[in-house]
Image (cartoon, rainbow, N blue to C red; front, side, top):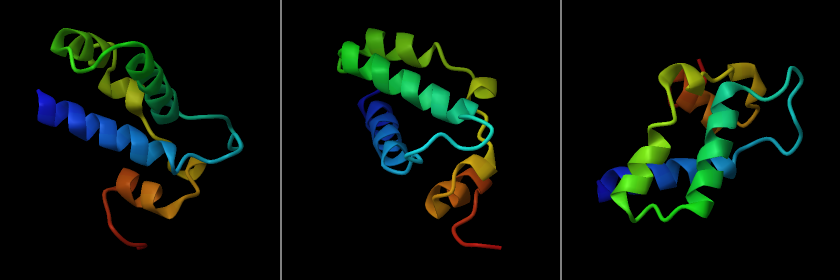
Length: 88
C-alpha cells in the first residue's frame, strides 16, 4: 500500500508542477479536476492511514480521469497522456 501511495503522491506532485497557469481554452479537463480533488483530499486526510487513502482513491473512476490532450501545453504531460516519450 505504501508503494502505491508514494506513486500517487509523485504523480499528483508531478502533474501540479506542469498544470497550465491559466485555464485552457475550452476549460479544464477531467484529469485536472480529478488531480485537484485528490490533492485537496490528500491535504485534509492522513494518507498514511490506508483506510483514508483507499477511501479517497475509491472516489475516482477511470472515466473521471479522461485527459484532453490539447489542454495540456506542457510537452511532458502531453507525451505521458499519449503514452509516448517524444514527439511524433
